[in-house]
Length: 162
Image 1 (cartoon, helix red, strand yellow):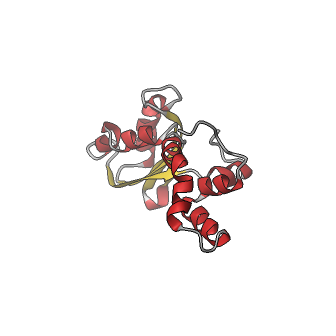
Image 2: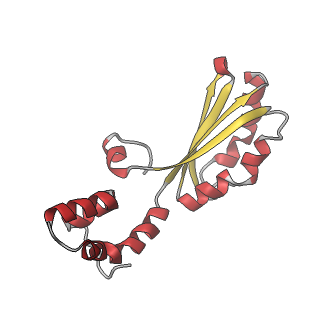
Image 3: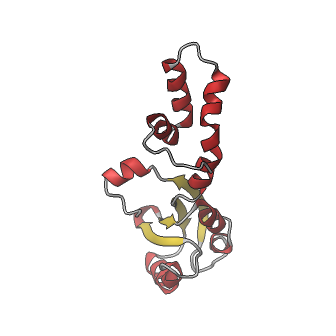
């Protein structure tokens, strides 16, 4: 981690948004500069940036198809909803939004995790694998995605991630 955080530095702010674009813009600005120098200029921040990025809040999207009735599935999930409460049994989970499209027999959830490690642990954990074998859920075609959050636009649109 650098000894100071140069957030007032415009080049560094660009680097935080897109390291590749920042390097490209830096090369354009310093025509004829040595590309190795340009990369080296940002290198002290790269390890720090990767570490901070891994601590950023993360979204998990879960989609599945189900064979049972809506009422049975909602009843079953309502019984298990306390597990998903803040400070519940799922490490790092801040909130979950439950989703259903009854006409398509499709359901899922949007989860906000404190960090990427917690999100990946959940996706690879026993709850998701248990969905495949749960008779009451009758779930199949289970798909998960882990998403990084874009803090700038999300803050502007008042996304509920703070």
